Length: 640
Image 1 (cartoon, rainbow, N blue to C red):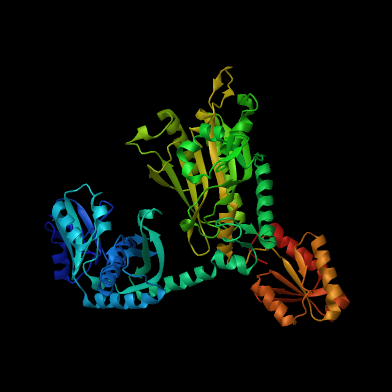
Image 2 (cartoon, rainbow, N blue to C red):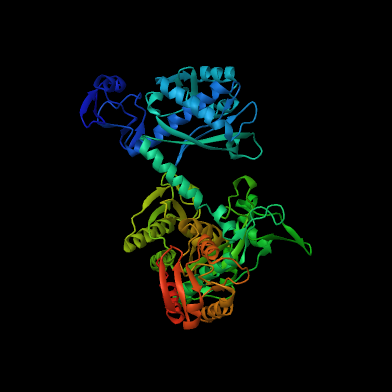
């Protein structure tokens, strides 16, 4: 017998696995059951003692169950419409669901409405969803009879002898669940797109067709999500980048995953780099610069050729020696550290570099600026004594929040990745080092007042880390800052400092990337602002627009005066267009300030000021406009 809190709030006593019957009797519907914080199928036997909570579709925890069920409705519809199709996997994901298929013949986006229509029929049929348990041999026989090779491969990786399937009408699928009680509960869904996807993510395996969709418990929630998607589409950096002439990626001429920064994009990059360097100097960092290639011996010592060779480019032969393009900067920073004998008084040493690295990414995973093959890391390495580590981590957090805040990111989620306490043998370094490192990270987060999620088993083998995820203007989460302990490289490179006892000691080393990479950060920044950068980052801060040809000399003089004051200004005089066209183009290009020069303004040493928001500030002296723009730039705020 188990006590179950129903979606209505009532508590009932349920015997064994009869929850579905109890719900039906009471006229209630539940998506799943939460027991000890874990999500379970409503069909599963309940614990003999203790409390359970049945959750309705409107419970946030139910969205995964709804979307997983929607993926089965999708697969059901596809099997009806395309005899001979083969099923792969169909999970719920953060924003919806997908299912991978091998179709007998190719399909395209024009086929999605037909599939969605069939899904709607299956929903209208309100088919009961039944959980079916089969012994392993019968499960294998069933999948073999259907010719489901992908499912048979998955079955081979399930250690249990009792295998879970779910059946709805004539459709049955290998699945561990949980699922909704019936197809009729998947009321509000939409199919979004399709794409190619390798089976198991392996480029040497079959190319499948992945159909994406999403589902929500209410029509209003679905409509709101579609509105959000449309806004996200408008902000897509892959569209805005070329439209605003910020960057390009030319697969055929230059190469996939290699970014060309155009003058406007380079202007934004310059502002990012300048601000970053100034703040690092203020924080006590020393800026360094290192080569783009290094000898094979360097990467053997660092371990990259053992652990990361698949992500590195092929070696180049230089005078009989192998050299590699660098995938990381850390071995070079260590080499700089080792050029001198270091004393405990020299520590901490903080090296920082905007270092361009190169990593081989398969073409299928490249994604605009967010996943590229050559990128510039805002890399830093802190080499310090054990007693300094907590203060250094805290200083990293201070610098991180300050810099990210200047770019408009003030909402964060923090994850603390630590080792798996059940399998400490998988990690290098002593227990004492790990415990001290973890304590230092926790204390720094607590001193900074940053709540965090502890992720046991998520640390890499060479140390624990803090990952900071920012939320953009659309509340999407982006992982940016990483503060990573490293017990591995100091050992491999035999790093040392002379302590106050005159003996050599091993220093602690922290890898720290604040923005991640300039390319990825720029892509996120474009989408965060929708291309309408604040004044300090805008590639063109002011466009000076003459009303007639007679005002061209005056407009060019105003632009020169603004540039002399350090403002990025352009006089739009090369092409004779109407003033209305110039204003519209400036708004399309998201220029913060439009300075209109007519006969009246030219006569009085003034301009008529318009903002890209459409606000008209009227007639103003040029000197006052300079003061206004410089104030907005200096404040690094969003207002103009």
